[in-house]
Length: 128
Image 1 (spheres, rainbow, N blue to C red):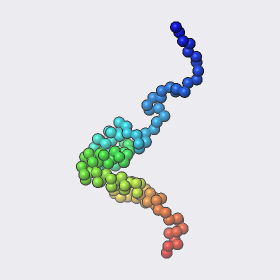
Image 2 (cartoon, helix red, strand yellow):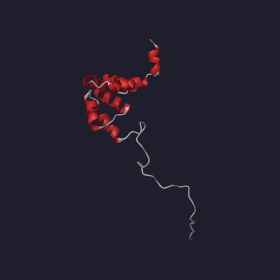
Image 3 (cartoon, rainbow, N blue to C red):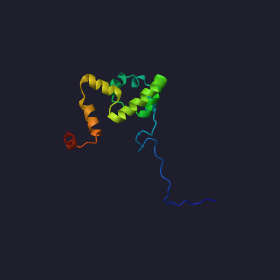
Image 4 (tube, rainbow, N blue to C red):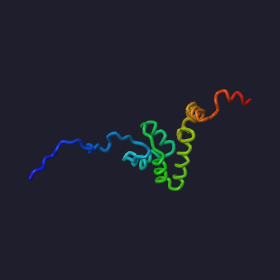
């Protein structure tokens, strides 16, 4: 006994490969994120800033805190949280801020702070 199979449209779609159409966001945890956690060059103060500048890598807040905790324990956790909060507020982490002070490149730091300021350009002159 044979059954005929009719070619009818199906709601089943073809499988999509795991990486197709997906972009890495803060919610995705990839192997690269794990490497960032265990890479000591990402967590040594100032060295990490130079390392990221040379390689062009970035590190997500969770990976920064996890790696700082891994290498620094409780103090590493505290400094990691502070560094993430500082970067959110100023646009630069502590290492980049220190390096910009040494290099004299304060334009980026002052423009990041100024862009977060709610005063309009004319409001500063009205405050005399």
